[in-house]
Length: 331
Image 1 (cartoon, one colour):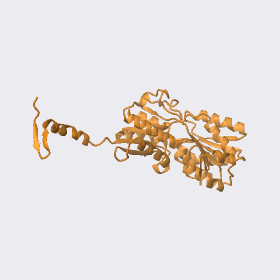
Image 2 (spheres, one colour):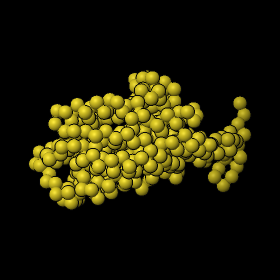
Image 3 (spheres, one colour):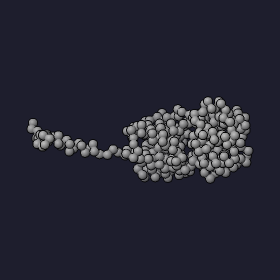
Image 4 (cartoon, helix red, strand yellow):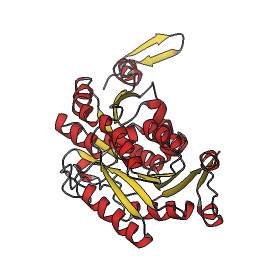
């Protein structure tokens, strides 16, 4: 076998090696693929910062750098769930490689919009809504996290009663058109009966009806509010918090975002933890895993958050039992 060589100031270089440089090095010079991660959200980025930061930190830990190998395409319905299908279609048109959703309505809209992978940061019950057929083996193009935790609504009512013992009549806005509203209503009513509290159930299905429902609650003598994390109320939390402040109503909320914005107390799923875990799903899918093969996870962390400034404004004294179990005090 004859190997051709070329003489240069570096010596005699085999032609085979030069050919290798010409053919192989350009491959190493190719820029890494940059993924477009669509986010289909309830609220604007500024109101969702803690969750978004947790998601971005999860991606960083997995080796991703924003602006280099991924970009975020963030779309928010601003508390109007009817906008989810349009924004999901926009993300498909923008050629998102993967869509990350919050709420069952967002996941369902994304699923109906196309076949791209979908990672849920939360869903009250993806089976009841037909997003997936199984948590263990979701199949199709959807996976991620759900918030299926029993007795959360009942626990919130018990904490509210402990924090504000004089509570006698609580108003609970629910979207009674949701598949899970019936179970939540039964939880609340059962817990209320045990605590000797009267519950006023308010059917709230859109932003326009939210303030009217809250006014109705006051007219019917409500002395406290029980607020869940449904799209309409969470996306319009400023309206709820301002109303509660104006009418001096203690309110128990389902997510930290409410308390961060000035609400009194929240007990429920630790959403930043879910967003951080969602990043691991995104990483696995971008590396080749099929969404349908990844079991849907459940919450492993709950948190109790109290806003001390709101408590002072309402003349609410935080009992020592709650101070011992609180996860965060926002001052």
